[in-house]
Image 1 (tube, rainbow, N blue to C red):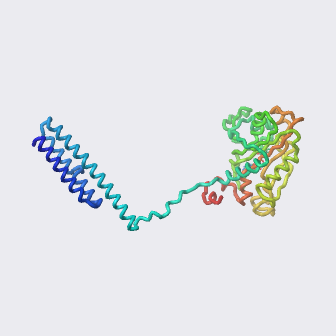
Image 2 (image 1 turned 30 degrees about the vertical axis):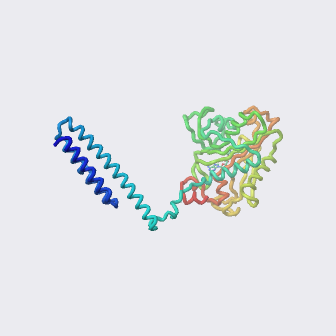
Length: 352
Ligand code: FA5
């Protein structure tokens, strides 16, 4: 065989293949065609194999002709396949087999977590009373979490907060690092930063406590801290603000109770409770038979805290409060167990 014979064989093969291709009307026969001409054991491959017997100088020329034929047949195959597919789509849609009006799969949409919703609602309520929203670090120093809040080292008041120490070495000093047990450290941080008064801020954020969980206690939860400092602020301002907040968030019918409480960073201190949503104040498992659920601690900012951040307590006074967000959401929606918030159960979460 010469190079000329080989080229003529390739050219014959190509024209036969193209003529046959024109007659094919369905995809299955087109696939057979591909296997016969372009497959690994197909006619073109066999022709290529015969080129090995040609003298080297002729082999190159014949090889190039074979590659050109291969490209031509592959392109013709692709075009024909596309034509058949388009024809098949057109037929099935006109015969009604393809219903383009069928609705698609709905896109699944997530929702805001009930805690996020209540945090936003409460921030909006305070924003409507002129409070600014500020955030702070979840990993705090002992100095801000305790010392600047008038809770010195070894003071028994530290027992009120079961603390998760980050670098606990057995020695607690102002440099020790912890997961903040409340949002109150931001009181000092904000007052130190604010040059101009009045200060009127709320601080939403996550808190952590080394605590056993039950129906109303989690080891991680959200608080919103409130702080207002100015000349002439009194306890009446504190009560008025918190009554207005309870009215905005829980409606007119919920009852609110203030009682004395102790927090080292306020004087006087108070706790605010709301009547139990489940038993309407009769006493049950959720309110521990008291009829009331404690939702926040509050009081007038202690003179020592004001002094510690450089404010003159004979000129400035202020009030502060800290409230639990999950407890607020429980009251609002009648949720019986705080542990439901973070158990990742969609049956619970989808209700909000
Ligand atoms: C404090 O954390 C004070 N920092 C509040 C405060 C701020 C007092 C400013 C005075 C002035 P207490 O530990 O009581 O206080 O927590 C405040 C609120 O956080 C509680 O009323 C409750 O609603 C919520 N809370 C406390 N511990 C938990 C817990 N383990 N799980 C869920 N919520 C909690």
